[in-house]
Length: 295
Image (cartoon, rainbow, N blue to C red; front, side, top):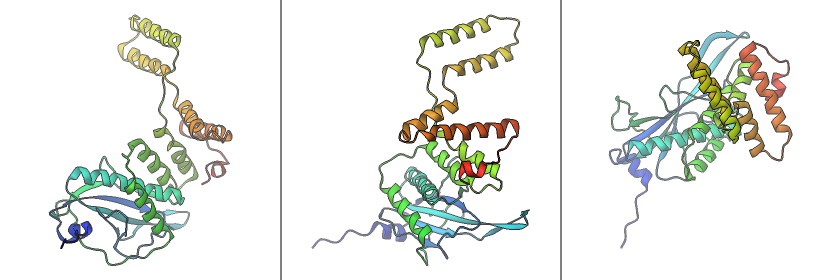
């Protein structure tokens, strides 16, 4: 008589030494957002090879006054646990970060990834409590509301997909999701428009004559002894940049490629990017920022 195969989640729970590694992602929600979690919770995911836990942290009040009111930051730690190696935990932690950002963006909810390491997730050893590990404790409650059920759906979709997390996409989504937590319209607008830049890859112009012209200019500059070395190196670098399209051109090309059925999208993005440049480089503003950015 064959014995049934044990549930991997039970192994994760009962035998942490067999799958000791996990990853933690800290998130900060908007002041008025409801997380949907009254206490620590384990999510019921389709993926049975890991356990995802939500741990609400104590709310922290920002004592700085803004328009006569205090703001309260709602913080959550999200854990994904049950991996044999630190590398597996890191990859799942990156997927978890992507899923949390996607859930926030799809619902138009602000979200900030709260981390102080190069990656948005921190890998830890569950067996080393007090040395980076969290210890393991099964959750005690789970209440499903729209925001939390949306989070579960996004995590299920990302975890089930055979994909490698694109770091540039992660940066773009992080900038977009966190922009709505900014306190002024200008800072929100700059954050939203800037979120396009990590996605825009600047192409070289396919024009041999242009390449030759730029190369000739660089060579002439190198042979001009009257120009100090530091200035010459700086100018040469700027000249070499002319071989590739500008970041604004790359963004417009990106929009054309992905939204071919929307001819107005390019002009809208172009307008938004020009306003962003004026804000950053001239200190200017625009009376229609809220309408343009949808903030």
